[in-house]
Length: 305
Image (cartoon, rainbow, N blue to C red; front, top):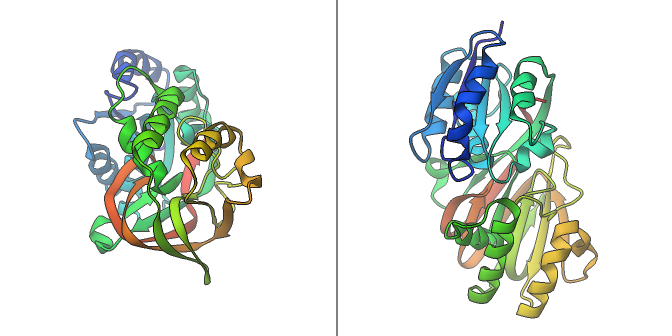
């Protein structure tokens, strides 16, 4: 039987994960022994997952939200040097957004069923990505779902300031705050697989999956297992246009707007005249980068669904 560890983030979903922990532990009794670990702060899940992968755990489970998944993926892929052939990622989605779990086909809204899937589900291979900026390898991150540069990275920063809302509504409120306070594009040059474009860049989303932020379909044609990123570029637009874009990003119809550029590529570089905020899987990667490079890693991640 595969050696298993559950890595729980007790503060996921404003602490709801901690309240669910005793229930999860009771459901685990129906299955072969699984080790249990809880995170104590930011980046701790990376350390726990990397150590588990190096110590021969074949099934490493993220119990939390997208941030927990992001950290566990980074720990696993660091230990496996970018490809998790010997380790399968499980997800018990008990966070506020759970976008990656939804994309990968893990059950939502039923943690007990998610525990069952960890032990009884099938394994599928999906792509991962890697992002770096001018800091180089020392700051690189693996990504499961995608990367945001500019506007949507600032939305991520603003969402951390909102404490009364959760999930999708939190990101909508953060987007409205960002529109009010953040209205700045910067000249940028992008290269996607050798094709170049220059524009005053407000936002670039580099997506492995088609949904993030609890329900925004920024790159609605993206797929986790197609071997490339989808990219959405938005240039300088008015605040009124930014407001109008919000409901269109909810259902993916923004792609028909002539101001929006959609691209598909396996390697992407972005060079900005001014520093831009960057997120990776909804986690803040940088508050000011000028050089961002992303590469897809086809089939790098094995996921239990």
